Length: 230
Image (cartoon, rainbow, N blue to C red; front, top):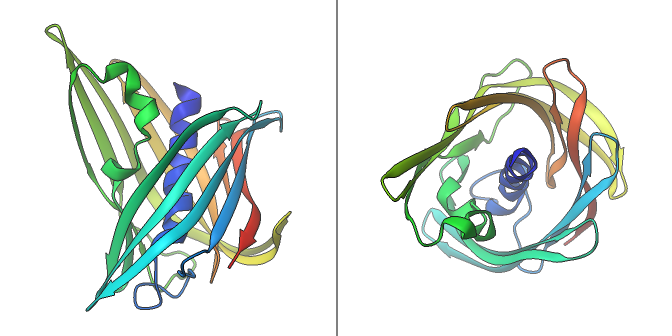
């Protein structure tokens, strides 16, 4: 479950890079056919899987842009884990992502015959970022009922802050980035955990890299941009 939560958080951040249009954010490209590939690694640097994104349609209506993209994920053995289509919209000077639409269906298949309720607060990224800037918190809550037993899972992304600017290199190229720190707190039934993380965001590209840490600061998982095609 811990691995699924980490991959879920990486998907959320990566998907931000596909939501925006010029009238929504200066950070990200948004044209039909744009494709991204992110590769995820465990704490030892071994491959955990590859996520592929492709923008299939983009529609503009007044100040709102709606985009549909295809997301697929294969594990370390090359097995297809899931393949889904998602629709997003953005307007004004913020890029937002809807948590409910991003929860992978396969992640919840084991609960498909149960009563389920998903609520949350979208994650936001403003057009203008500056070092030291604090960003709004976000969260998602899953309530599942089974034979009189209620199971509650929450994920809170808090203490979001633009830490610094940094230039990094991945297999997709070299990028000038803003580095955003956050605490990602999860509670599954009575079990609590906190996964601090950093995300590297580059103008006109989106997420370039993401790392999740243990309490002692050691990396427990990472994701990086390995392909990018407009």
